[in-house]
Length: 423
Image (cartoon, rainbow, N blue to C red; front, top):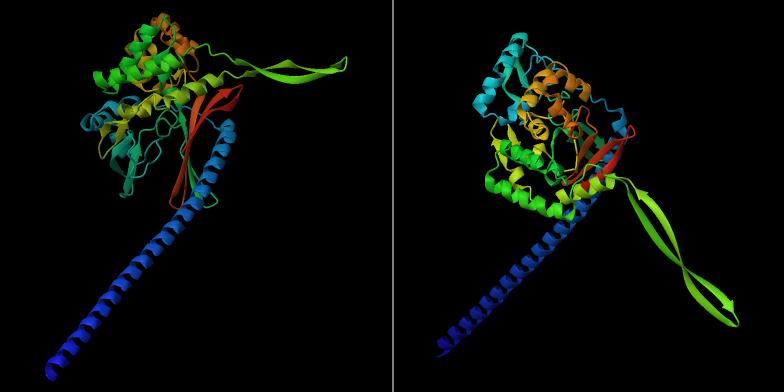
């Protein structure tokens, strides 16, 4: 009996020790989880605080770069280059890889023989631009050379008007790119409020979309969206300044025969808003949810050599005219649909501007006198100088990034800000 009692006492003691151990383990696990949770929260808060600091620096760098770019545009020399012995950038985007290689083969041979990239700028090996030549040439000393780029009208990557600039502002690394919007298809043409040329405008839009390899369903979807935008604000070429009248009412008190009478006297102030307000309105509409750019952003060509999409060739900032010296073939054809003989005129322009860019529209009519009537009908849709640009700024600081796109228009020999989109 004594032994049985002893064993029972030992069992109870061991059971109590097991419970204590179990409770201790549970408490340790709970404390570990609480500690881990607090650590994660603290680290998360630190990351959020650091991101806010980095984003503030990135945003400051972005805003500063935008101001610098706008102020420097007056000093920008937009000089068109001549390309008599080079393939035209205009057709490269529409070729498959095999046709692309065959198209640039003669130019490739000339580069390899000389051992230097002629007048073309050198691109890094990771370039995916449509003009990046997919081969490496050998220099005279036998060393391997870099890939060579077929330059755009300004000698840089199309549609840039100058080489991208990278600067450091504080701790932010900033990249500035300036694009030629007059070299793109103006989407405002698709909502043109002019019955005399509406049929031609629609035909030009469909021609452009077919060049961009959009199917009939995608084209109809874009038409419906543009129709909705047109119902809000149709586009007219004769954009005029807006006169706004502000009414301000003031109280006037008079005492007459012991009684005070109060009446309101209204004053009117008129002010004029520049016509660029219309351009800003269209830019906002095209960048709103009313227009889906999904189809336009879909890659037409996506390979190791290059990447292309229709969105690259569309002017969403309400540019009105096309620069015949810097626009690619399909944009030129869409512009000359308004007068006829679009394919023939586009071909003539491309061949002649390779030798020397057109100085003015008078020279264009003189050179292409056979099509002078057709060109005359298109004069308000075309130009020989680009006066509508976009400044794209990307600023990075730490893990944060800030971007801004600013549309600017040349007016009275100065560039004025038209619209801004920032993220």
